[in-house]
Length: 279
Image 1 (cartoon, helix red, strand yellow):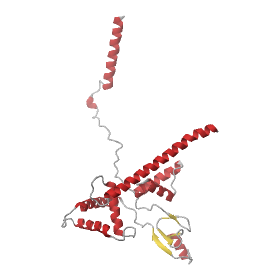
Image 2 (cartoon, rainbow, N blue to C red):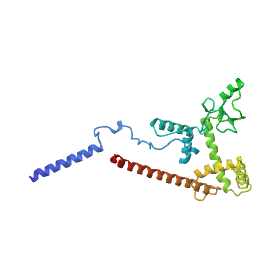
Image 3 (cartoon, rainbow, N blue to C red):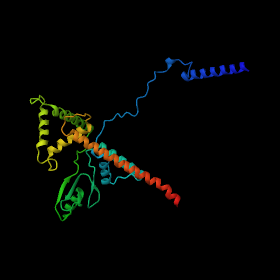
């Protein structure tokens, strides 16, 4: 009996070793030269596209304003598909208007030229209806209308223009970082002096952005772009730390809102089985 058990054990071990060899080399009789070298696939999760920024997707509240202004919803599958498609459209077409106003005469969304009444904020007229009223020698509105260009004919940017725009932003960011630390009064860079003058204007201007200063608005846009991209703890760019703290506070507020919403949904779902059992 002992010899039979030892022989069975030896047989089992040989079968296991043979199976391990087969797993290592499933084709033992094949010639390795017949097969090309194994090339492991690259990471499929690596995004090869350039990062695109949009002011309407920085925070949840801004995206909510975009959805509310255009009646985007996620309550049904078809509406969720449409909203997702329009979100991608706004990301890839930043020069397109985000909010369209319907014409008060024909009801069609205005995407080129519109005529607004300064006394009646709810009245808007498209260019086609305005031409029709003029041809009929009729007055479309009792008050005077102001012509407003919503989007020019050449508003769409080509791929080359988008690359130039991105390159221009990168150069401005480099110049902003250089001018913030440059102490040389005779810096060989001509643009350095211009950027220093812009930064000095931001500290001395009495009109500010609230008053409609275009130079301050331009400086503030550059500082905001820099703050979103900056990862330095001791950055010398003006307002960088302040803007990063504001962005951080917005993220914390957003996280708190998401947590409250999640707890409310969990509470609602937990009360649903109890209500069904009561019925």
